[in-house]
Length: 567
Image 1 (spheres, rainbow, N blue to C red):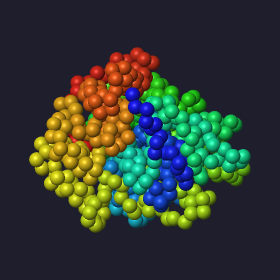
Image 2: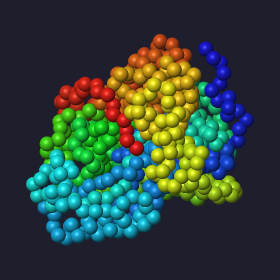
Image 3: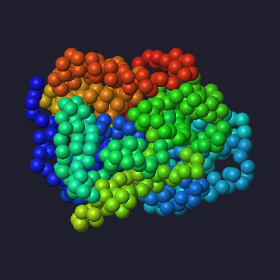
Image 4: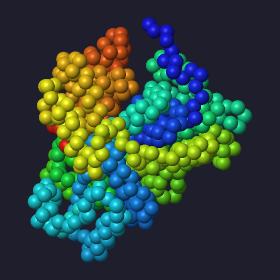
């Protein structure tokens, strides 16, 4: 057994910034700070994107419903961020048409919705996406034949964007931070703060696999732990923290039900929810209910599933809503505000400077926000960090592409960038025995970073074998993930380096081959292999736990080949 410390790289370092949390906001802060030249270390207790970032609706959007709250500033800001992400991550962020059907709505309601669409277009005046338009009843039923025709009046349509794999978006921020000098650690828990009087001088961390504890010195600590912020801050500062209001959102997958993303309003409480084509399924969600239990225990329960299923059956009665493959559940970490409903809590973020609130220097936190705004939130946080540290460096993240979108030529707009990336990958994959569907699939996951996988295949052609005949993914991706993407668990690979965990069988058919390869690559003994298998099966069981409350049998789908994800 190796006696070399996993923390060797940290010895003698004084970091400008230590970041707690490897979700989208923490990853974005690490990238922004590293691109500005700061010395950065990030610590994540589990795996990158293992919390809220992997349980969202997977949209990059301005938030049409926030217009009803008159939060025009938030909508405008998020629409600007949408354009930036379409530009810097064209392989990960895709335009998506949304359809808002109307049933038996008054003239006033239809006029109000139309005005909202006009305002949405005006607020996105610099957009690359089309303006809204109207479909009459016949056009709606032609394009969406499963919609309930009774009382259907037509639909308004508009564009936003989708990020099919938020996990890969987080990973590319992590990789870019690493490429610019950041020290990145997953499965490493912050267990204490280093303190000299009223000043925080670093953190104490524990490696969750090896158990080693190490002190890490830093000029500033930024808590970006999302739903874990209050509980962690309470432990670190030894006093209660009440800055976060947690609300739970769940989704479920069913057989395809629509050709476009549908915006629907639940008859029970008029709350907005979506039915979205995703990975070849209907992706239905989300809910919004207060949550006060431990964040690690969050899951979809029978009541959550019943609410969504009852809501969606009204509008798409012929779809197969009795067949649910799996659920996801996550927590929004909203800025705490009492006395308002869950859905009415603002999605704006807040930066907390503990020098001002607690007379504690060297510690700050990020509360609230949403995935669409992560880059701007990170920029605000690093701006504050630079001000506190006396540094002068401007953000670059709005202009610098993420690693998978790095190109050797200058392109104009998302479409041209994507064409160039596609042509490059097809050319470089010649002779590697990959199908067109596999090249498209690798493009959607890695962008130009797929070239590293191609280089691996040229050295070891046998790694071009599919992990399982049902999937497009190949064995080389496992090797790539372990060598270059901080992948140390089977669950990391199946759920957050690829989308195998979101197939109909949740990647269970792939699990034996993944375990076999990772045993060799990571040097696992047999007991570790067994523990890894049990850990993944427990993650799958958690997504299926709602069945016990509803007394439903598993969908137990036949495993079918996964279709390529179109970009």
